Image (cartoon, one colour):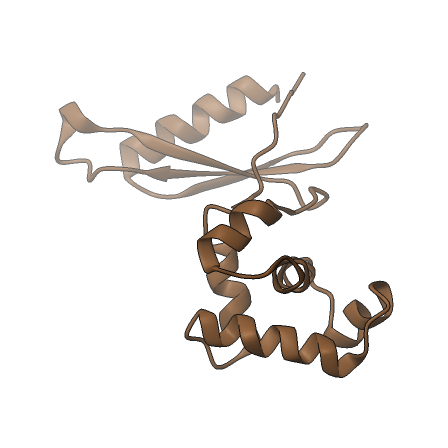
Length: 144
């Protein structure tokens, strides 16, 4: 089934039944994209109906703007760099090796960033960073 037809069917079903629709676009070349179509307004408000379409690409690289990250959270450049690596899924020991720092230095940067962000756990810090405007997974999507 062609992509446009799949998308239109998912949107129509989402609007008619006020249910979330999910489908995957499988491509021979390149990554497979998963589309989630979500109703925006309850179906009883017919004039205001709409949907949001979320596109997920498991191969897409995460983008964190370091300058924005540092400004938003009042981080030094090193603290921001370490935080960016955490968001990319690297452990403190991996970050230490990648940036030729001691493990304790990396932990110190993480602790400072957590204090500045009123978080007590590393995963809380990462969640806060991902929820910020510094985090972006938006990339132009060209489908055939």
